[in-house]
Length: 463
View 1 (cartoon, rainbow, N blue to C red):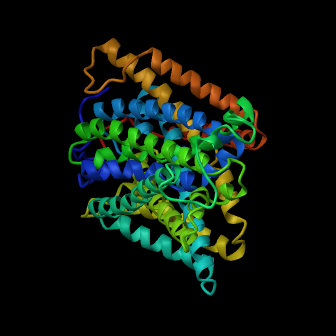
View 2: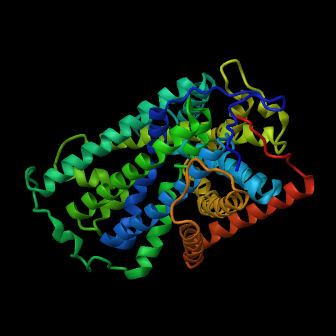
View 3: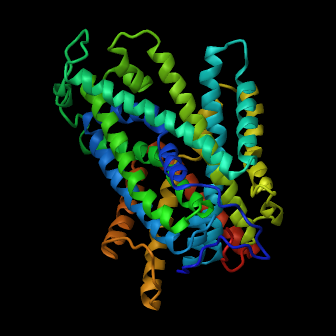
């Protein structure tokens, strides 16, 4: 692995600006992982596995911590706006690097539209006289503008979005603890008895834990943006070292803490948990307006993730362009250090989604989510394999690495094996199997197209 950073400008790649601070990157990492997957998806996972969903979160959380540590090792050695796409390029060739980059970009482009649609659906319910498609249009225009203003302004915007989400979770954990301790009275007594009641700790057994694991993994998607953002920070190597550990530990605390409160305060089979686990818990307090407050937090979570994903998609597209895997036009950078054409290209589908929301407002969200259901699993598999190959190469060539994943090669091999197991679990579920097969088909198609068109140049320092 090269120890140089891609901060420097080259003839083939215009220069992005180092406008992000370590604090902003940390909040971006938290904001990327704390989204609708926690506020909504956790309820679906609980309804499948019961209290044993905690094991699903522990397994998925451990995997994501190792995956992010792998990324940290590679980013510290060679910060790049293409992150894991650039690393896959170096490890397995231009066709693989192109495939990973385009797969990630397609995923984010669809997710951006889905997040705008999800937020618009909630807000449209508050203001029924204003159509859903208009809200989608407004959100897309707003966050496209925010990303075109410059990475420093984007970082500040995302910092405060993430701060609101983190504050909401901290408040939820505090209230939940007071309820469990009996300091805040409720109509019915609550306590740890709910962890073993209603069929026991694992009412659906290992099958339920495995099925919930798939939902939980999707919830952790979004943490990868840290590896992309590091390349535009004031100290890429130092920031990635400081960020990964703190962000991952906080994410585990927030996820596990929130789920413990939910399954301890309410029976896991309470129907209200599926609709909104946080609102259901706060509902036991009989406080007026709780559902509205939580709906507002979910909207903020969706818009925050949308904002981060526009950033991540545009930088990945820019990186593909600098490596001759995308049209050269996407490498144009404005005076503010923004790849403007890459930003516009990444939100183009969202404007199409505006029309889809106009024609089929109720059908858009499920369709969009089904399109990208399993891409995160495939991308994590590529990251794990890439790290193993590049680490082996670095040790063979005697290359110094500023940051190393501990337990190599055993931990890397164990992670690759775990990803294979997760793929196997996905194949046992009809819905997940369909999504995964579609994703694998798309991955193969992208690889074949890249091979046929001979996309790519030697990976270079793009920043």
